[in-house]
Length: 504
Image 1 (cartoon, helix red, strand yellow):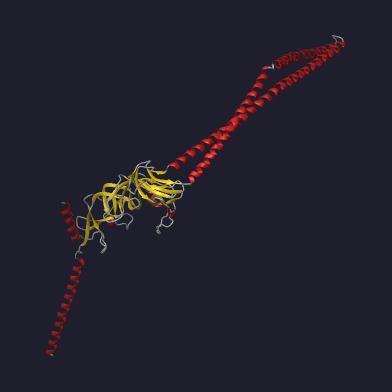
Image 2 (cartoon, helix red, strand yellow; image 1 turned 90 degrees about the horizontal axis):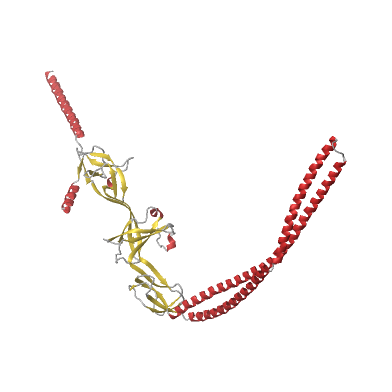
């Protein structure tokens, strides 16, 4: 019995010890887990960029073709044969200098035909001069007849004046007769009133009515006489004017014929002068058919040689002025809307370590052109419309080869000595752009910034940062959150030390 109780006691003590150990183990594990969970996170290594002042630009990159100032290709003025080429490629020339001489056997025949045409025109002009003389004689005769008639028409004028005086006198008589009639009618009215009242006998009314009738008759005769006088005067005036108009018409016709003859002479004189001028030009070409330089410059290319047959408008040689260098470019309509004359331009030869040259936009077409209208073989552009533009270099380089392709960088906008950052550190995932910075406790924090001019790889910061601030380069993994501990990458420190040593 005692042995059993002793074994039971030992077993209970064992279970109690094991339970204690198990409780201590679980408690220790939970405590260790809690410490692990509450320990500070490891700092994230990030790159830091110091905020500095710098320059930023908004540019357009295009390719262009080099041309010289006044570059042009001279063409044959007519069909013929190249007699002599007087210059060489690369030779310096002056305006008016002889470049190529041509000859044309057909010009001699043409000159003879034109000489015969000039002789024919001279004969025609001589005949027209004779017609002018005849027209002048006819005009003089017609003017003489008109003058003689005007000198000998005094009798007719006197008769007209006489008729006018008689007409004026008869008009006065009509007025007087009208006044007598009016007086007689008033008296008749008075007499009738007196008769009605019995003051005078009735036969007085009869006598007064007779007087009124006589006054009316006299008035009709006077008015009739005026009509006759007017008719006679009109007949005399028409007769006088008719003869004068007939003679004046002859003068006008003679003047018209003279003007017509003079116009024919003037027209044929101009035609003769034109033929003579053309004859002299062709004669000069026949004697010395020479193609001359139109500018001061250099010979860029010669397309013919001695003895070559050429047709009108065939290309002979190309000239250009090396003191002026131009770049011809084709802008897309989108880029053309941003470009303005006088904008600064950088030009460089396409290739490694290119040397840059400065220039300005000289001109810009206002009309877009089809891409294939200029013979553009670029399959990427196809037939998309482009806007031609010309860039003029500030100073001739003497090294750019006409016809070669160069890179053209047009500076649309430029800011100098402003806060500039690389675009890679700007976070735009939220409504307002921001950057990550390291606060005084070494933790990442957001800072909103206002963006200004944006270039290809950099952007202007107008507010939110100052020179001397440090901006965090966001790592791809893990993503930053406000309050995340960060530390500067060692590679960044080494790079800064190296950059500092280089600057020293």
